[in-house]
Length: 372
Ligand SMILES: Nc1ncnc2c1ncn2[C@@H]1O[C@H](COP(=O)(O)OP(=O)(O)OP(=O)(O)O)[C@@H](O)[C@H]1O
Image 1 (cartoon, protein in one colour):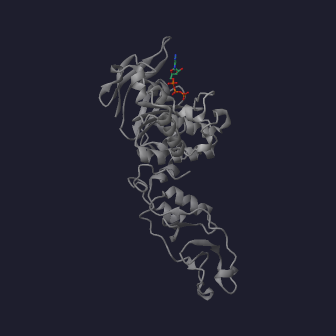
Image 2 (cartoon, protein in one colour):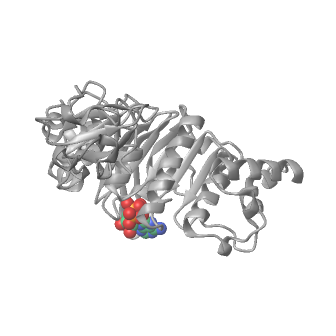
Image 3 (tube, helix red, strand yellow):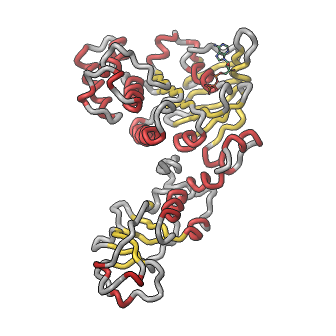
């Protein structure tokens, strides 16, 4: 656990970057610092590895004041990832990743083996090991940055806007892989961003910083959306608060209908009264949507409209299901199981009837994780 105890940072000249900040970053979880520019997020992050020394107050790691350790020694247990990755331009990818192992005087073979292992972990092909940073895309460089921070297997990771410099699609991929990685590694992570969507997607806990270095609210993403502490937080969360709240409503309890679902072998005479039909194969995998009027002799010859996005019953949130309903030609969201077989369909109005509070999506702590 990282603990901020009444931490204040006043810079010469009078700027107050942090004003009496007290909060906990629980072990093995992701704590996100989010807020307005200049709110003190980076300063708070850097107080953990002593790149910033507080004017007053303390930062503790597992109850021990960080000032008890020399900075170099302290930082060996703390990975650090920044925007634009901050790679050494004249070192190869594997040597960049092995930076800390080399500092720790691991032998070359062991350090390189570790670098290759980490490249795999963060989704980089081994063929990139001998390349230089300029020969990689921005997203690939960020992966190298994450791998480098993980190299000595530090229990703590500090990440300062690590995914901000890449396009939205790559960013979503990096976030998803980051969550997968964290599911395996359970690091204690402090993550700075000014993007509230990123904070909601990644954070187990979110601390909202406001101008003047004050913390306006520390809460789970779910509570933050449901109960913003004040107008500043409500304003920061923005206009889509209601829709975002649906990210935390699970689809496990939804009652899905089988009425519109028909196997491709079904008798076409038996389809009266239906507006849309979801045609499924012998394993109940969805093939497409059709309307009774478009069916001639048999379902197998009917023209099919694409199924569009589906949602995984239980693991996806109501927000994902609602998205599927909106994009579906029939207006019905298609729920599938882990094997991709259709469980049933739901209309938008069924989805909005699901209670949105205290009803985590799959109970994973990352209800918004699959919103992409
Ligand atoms: N070395 C410094 N000397 C003087 N003032 C500083 C210094 N570093 C930061 N500040 C000031 O402290 C305040 C907090 O800065 P900080 O970088 O922590 O904010 P932030 O929330 O991370 O902002 P951003 O999202 O823009 O990166 C700002 O007003 C900034 O100008």
